[in-house]
Image (cartoon, rainbow, N blue to C red):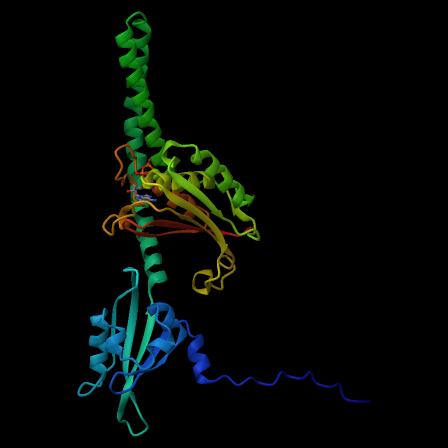
Length: 369
Ligand SMILES: Nc1ncnc2c1ncn2[C@@H]1O[C@H](COP(=O)(O)OP(=O)(O)OP(=O)(O)O)[C@@H](O)[C@H]1O
Ligand SMILES: [Mg+2]
């Protein structure tokens, strides 16, 4: 009998160290003793927005002239110190934005142990910072929830009393038009405060989501149709950039409609001059965000981009906090609610904004399995 033949193992492919470094998620840059760049991997290109071809041959001082903190680390790797150094700081992008990065700079030595250049390891900290920010925000909301629940109870009872008294007064002064007007105002305002308390309580209660497979384009179409009629949308052009192959997502129709209504309303309100509101849908392609876990393995993003006045750097950290508003008649609860609802769906909410250029709010949601 012939022995069973073994399955053939595929021939090992040769991978050069350059390919390995190119495939790393972290930036790797090497420079000779004079600081002239010799190797610049793909992740460095993404972080610095400079191509490897353009960077190679230039000095670290030329490429990182806007990052003196990084050059100080490089200086430590050269004689007489010849030490490794670590630090964190911001990369300034071509558009004036900032990318937080951590950098490790080490001296390179040849076989004889003689200093022969510097190697830099760059790590993008955006994702980590966003997670930290998320945690802080969740903490603030939890504190607020406890406070709101206590306050709501205390406020709702006297409010009920005021409303009842106003209704009685209105009935007993049926013939007096001015008393009727005043009591109507009282009742309306009491209802408004009641609604506000309910909204605040909504933020603190664990949400009961009615999850189903949804076509997000249907929800966006409805929202754009509805908000497109509003006074604030008069000057705006609406552009839909929908990916026709987008899969269904898992969500609560009512709650997600509320999220996109708030975002689209804000976008229109921000555009005092004529401008374009662009709504884009896309499937996540960035492995960093997608991750390898099953939960995060399939995401879609909805981007809502306006050409309004933008958000200042001082305001940006506060926009998701309840009651933060820069509008005369705003309650400042719109984005706080969006944040909570998106979180409850296991999604994320991000914002890029620059004064006078506009804002992009990006929402990720999980694909229905
Ligand atoms: N698209 C945007 N462009 C510029 N600023 C924005 C935008 N969206 C939100 N903001 C800023 O964030 C703040 C908070 O927004 P949020 O929706 O929570 O409250 P609001 O719009 O002020 O009031 P409400 O939504 O309760 O009517 C706004 O007051 C505004 O300063
Ligand atoms: Mg709003």
